[in-house]
Image 1 (cartoon, one colour):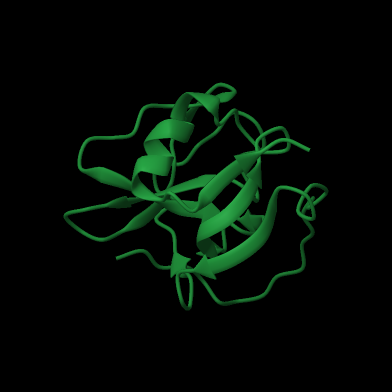
Image 2 (image 1 turned 135 degrees about the horizontal axis):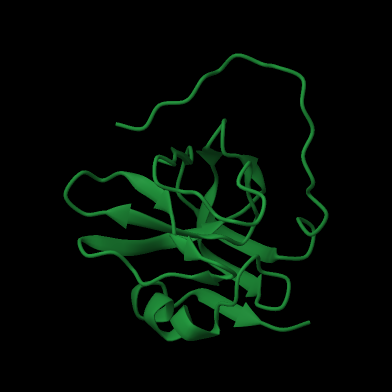
Length: 134
């Protein structure tokens, strides 16, 4: 089970695109989820998980995780996982408390990684996630 510390230590993070990545958020997982970030080690800013990041769920354990990345792109969906939705706000990896939407508009240009290669697969599971381009 994913766990995270509730202790507050002063720190800041960049949330520059948070107002434009996810819009028209109609439905989210109630209460959000704590992400398992054990294997999440992107090369670009490994301390945060940016709004718009694709979230997946391991079907056997029901653990929610950020979609793995390789370089500047999403990796393949790991075996035994399904697409759970889209992260609705930038969060610290050290505090992986995630709001996850499964019915929203996602600006593909402002997303942290290119979504085009996986959009069709996401839409088969979540047809109400709409990828737009402003």
